[in-house]
Image (cartoon, rainbow, N blue to C red):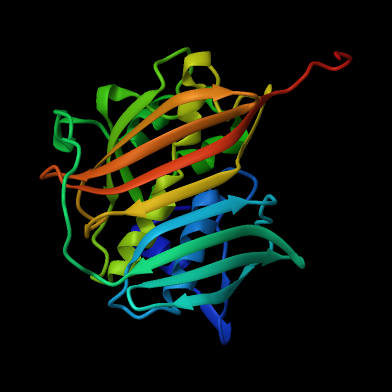
Length: 291
């Protein structure tokens, strides 16, 4: 079943149930549980709904507590912790079956001027010179498990153009770094919240798996137990997710059964607009009978 960009924006919209309480729907993208980026983005939308438009989000930090059940909607409870002169703070708890599955802390900041600097964007080929990752995945469809093949090869709301032809489902030891261009496949409306929410959704894609690349492992490896533990996202400047952004991900360290990865987003003109970081479980399953 196709998954156009308009459907993604609609998925991230929430149904108001009561004051500070919202409900979100789910979509299966082949993970057998709710995709972490969906819960992250929906929690962001719930928090933003309780904040004035002149205070956009600047940082959000979430913890994944339990796997999400695709068969049940998620209810988001927003705590209005503080409304200050310049900053607003919110806490969001995502609930399923009476249990918290995700917790988010979010901070919003009234726009103001200040000192400015940023890292330079690396020189990479433009997206028009690169292939859509979906085309690469479809070429390798016979290498995917049958239960994943249909979902992984369906039309997507996001167009990823990996630099160097690399793609997330690839195998074999590789350096712990990835670069890709990304945007929605079709334009979306002008609401800045929708652009930030879609970027939050996209930021979970291919982030944790970067920490497994040096070891020749992937999230689809049956010998691996892989799960996101936390996710942080910082917004530095305005952007449009329906225009190309360069997403650069690297994993400086892994160990103790956990992997750590971080990423940055640049616009085509080289403006650094967002940063992200995540730690996750990358546990190698023990063989039966081993100690």
